[in-house]
Amino acid sequence: MGILTTLSTLFGCGQNANNASSYSTDTSKDKGAVRKPITKPVENIVPTEDQKERRLQSEAYCTAHGIPFYKNPNSLFVDAEDQVTLRTQDEVLDRALALCYIGLKSEDLEQKHLDEMDKTYDIKSKLSPEEKNYVDAKHPEEQQKINANWRYEGLHVMLWALGYIDSLSYPDHMCDVARDVKIMHSLGPEAFRKNAKLRSKKEILDQADLILRLNWACVNARINNQSAPGKMDKGVVFERHHALNWLIRYMNEEWDEVTTDT
Image 1 (cartoon, rainbow, N blue to C red):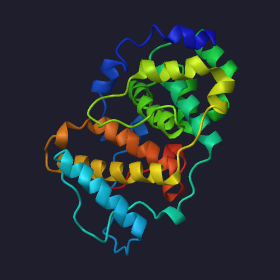
Image 2 (image 1 turned 60 degrees about the horizontal axis):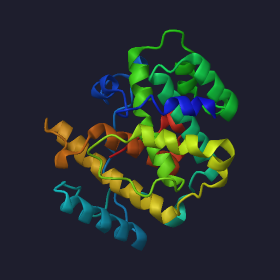
Image 3 (image 1 turned 120 degrees about the vertical axis):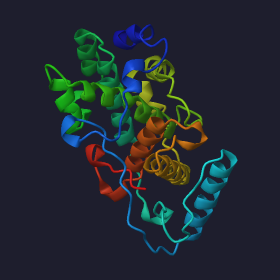
């Protein structure tokens, strides 16, 4: 665990401030940028009871924080509980490790430490194709580095889903990277897997529904040349939406292809 011991001094303030300030969902895909959210065509859904309850709960949250929400009662839902198969616990554990690794690389951690982490956790086998391209690039593009740094927010969601973080706080600030990395460091490879307990489908769907509505509000504000409502950080919202959509297998898309439809 020597590699993660080294990390405890690396994150005094969390994410790299320069990277965070450069976040964009509007850059083109071929430049390695995060995909921009897509607005779904209007649907005509007859919601199930759990979908209606989940939506009402999310709308109450929005109201409490002064965030507008989508009003059409027959559109914009996450799938009903009986239609969703979550990612397995092992998949979530592997994704957390991959996201931690690329985040650390974006912080310019020495290669010898990255190699040690790879050896300890078998990281390379867990990376997505785009992550492998970033890791293997001799001279990564700046946008690749920025995107990798923002994936700490996805790591935060994975640690929550695995029961290592009690709750996902209001998305007006970036996650505490030092704390999240410390969680993994303090456990080590075996205990990190053994002590994890994937949250229930209901808990994860509740968060997926909420982030869907929060991201809709951010996208709506952007379209109207307004700041994100409720002082939300649109980057945090976007990354949570991406991670939660992956967790609920939205459209059965793999990590690199996950969309954040609103």
